[in-house]
Length: 81
Image 1 (cartoon, helix red, strand yellow):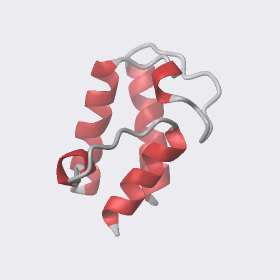
Image 2: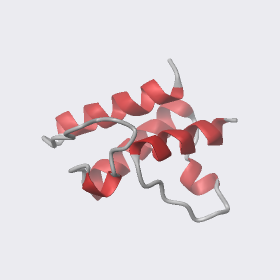
Image 3: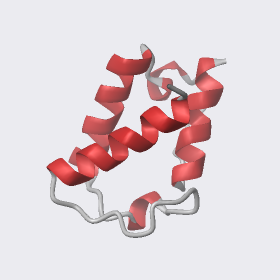
Image 4: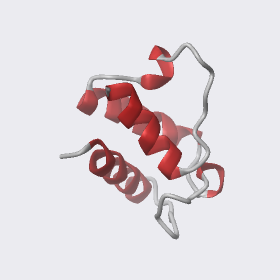
């Protein structure tokens, strides 16, 4: 399974579990307007660390916060390289 498909699956799973509606679920989805809250993002990051064996937010020396879902996916893809 690709990093992109894992990330998308976790976003969808957490949204379902937390009873959130993601609306249009494409690369241009602005994370702050996604309907997910900070708890949802914490769950997603923790689960992705379990699945992918990395947390790019703690590994990165640069302070960077992805703006869109596409940015978030690329952030994880780049961290795995």
